[in-house]
Length: 441
Ligand SMILES: Cc1cc2nc3c(=O)[nH]c(=O)nc-3n(C[C@H](O)[C@H](O)[C@H](O)COP(=O)(O)OP(=O)(O)OC[C@H]3O[C@@H](n4cnc5c(N)ncnc54)[C@H](O)[C@@H]3O)c2cc1C
Image (cartoon, rainbow, N blue to C red; front, side, top):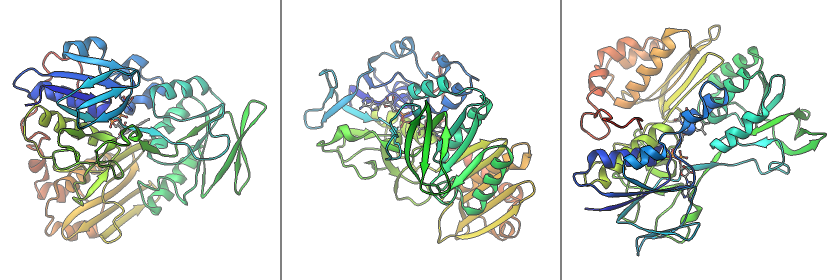
């Protein structure tokens, strides 16, 4: 059994792996963590931005906790090379770390639109804690923030920007907002809702350059007039942090290609989270799912396998859920499958929208939208996710849902989806209480 575990990356995947190794191992092993940043959760940064949590609350483990777990740390250092023949990782200060097995969990970084001025003053990304600090220092009541990109990450910080009293304009090059999360009909309803709530939205809008004009930013647009902003946030995508693995034996496609135990092409090297190209629950093909639940589940599976267990991963479900100006917007699974059978319903006045997608009598994807105050929005988010995740055969309830896409509850109850999902755990065993560990990861 591997005695020396090396974890590269102290984000969600890395921390879940460490925690699971300690839970599952039968003999005490050595764990070394190399991470460019201290362990924290990127997902909570929007709450730090709107000041509902203090900066100290973003961290997932302090130095004392890591010491308590018996983890040797190299924090603030980057892995720069992995010699998979010698089982040695080299860090940016020249330190070398030997391992028996290793986890690559280096996550992703924000990418800016490739236009002149994108790296100039007043232009920010929002992906790391450092970047969040930069944005927080700039946003003040009355200031005009232009968000370039209307994807999921942009939407996670939209409420925070508004709650700080800033004026917000969103520009998106695609013909609709949330292009990789919801369809045209849903996007139209969300855009109208945002505009009613004072957010200006420009779709099909191509940014060509950003100039500094007397301390403000002028965003030159290909058409439709320029914009002047105090703060620009580029939410224009992410890239996996894998360049440092160039020349290693590890096979990389969109991410590190992993098998159903999350092992890479090098058997004692695992990958998890944003960098892993693992099994998609619905299609059973490989995909990169850069979302928190995948990073958590991957980390748990890898941790158990590193600890000597034999745990297969069933695959991860794409889950996107955001709330903007008290409107819940969610999509699950293969929501954009053009070959699926579909049914949809819209109540434009609320607004509320459901789109359901089937392969055979199994629900494989869904889009849900509705006011957060409407109990059926929240309930349907949970129930539709359950139906997609469980892959339950809907039988006659398929016809019911096709006719009544808003009436999810009877189908959910009749198919006994809760009793199918309740006993399911990632590691195939009942979950354990965190014991004396003061943080849950
Ligand atoms: C603002 C924001 C909001 C989000 N909201 C949601 C949400 O609501 N729902 C959702 O599902 N997902 C959300 N996400 C995405 C989610 O946070 C990521 O999918 C998740 O953090 C991925 O975890 P990870 O462990 O793979 O990578 P990360 O959390 O990115 O951790 C990677 C770690 O590796 C370190 N690292 C990088 N390169 C190296 C190197 N060469 N050597 C050593 N260390 C290195 C980094 O410093 C970091 O500590 C959000 C992300 C952001 C930024």
